[in-house]
Image (cartoon, rainbow, N blue to C red):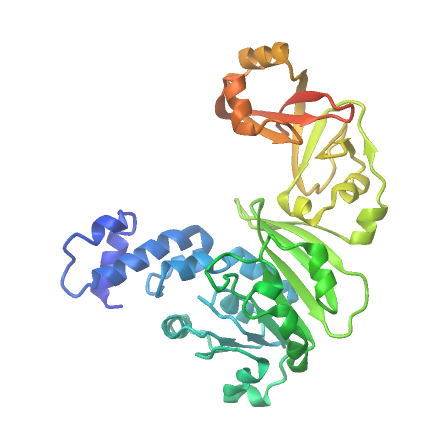
Length: 401
């Protein structure tokens, strides 16, 4: 980009892109290209802050930004990378995972089939002065295609990373590995001919038991959430591994200082865990994060942190103590009110504003808010749930400071 375009982008980065397309642009500025970059920069401001700070990076399409990993989840993947690793990234895309993996790996050979996206990625990596990434414009149909990159012929690949496309033939969304492109279930044995280690990024909609059933040598599965929203499931395989599969439920928290709330267990431990149920709601309420819920650690969490489950299908817990490093939110209970006409009236009068959530409750949160006639917000939480005796209650609580 020329300097006129850079100035234009910075001056209008908070403007309505649709209006910019119909406004006259300064001489030397391609308004369509500038508008695309402004639109993409709006999306990466929180998603990829390191790249947002560099206005000279190019983004060929809004879709490439929407589909790429966030900076936080890309950094997370580096837990599987060693400093001497020679990594092959079969599905480069916008190159976010490639870039952050390269910060730890020795070398990364990355492949992108779309020529426009390839040119943008290659230009961006050159601008970022990254010397250990080698990008090729190749459509990898089988593992032999990667050796079209001559530089790879003398390399000992130590890890293959793949993020398969999740669109079917009719552009519908797909989730199962066998429906993605490439078909992971068919390709996995070929991958092991190149490398003994494989890391696969998958949809958060994937069934964890199905992954273990369908793929060989699975060593670890990580449910990765970002600020309590499940973003992806990573499957790590090592050729010949026959041990128990470790399942990690990790929530990356980026507010203030970035940190990861981690908890790991296995399917067998979850099955064997003994859960105790509460006779009443005690002083604190504990709500697991989304990664824990997706991993299915309903009993393990209860046993490990000595918490009482409020009901079999209500995946929230109570105790009289605050557990250390609980993977979720802990609220201090104010009072528990029965869900009936009298209780609804009492809550409406006492709490004109509150945050409402429902767990194993017959009414969704939005409808409950209308029944209670209270405004959303404030520092009070109303947790509606079913107890072990099947009674319905409203648990009034607040953040534990």
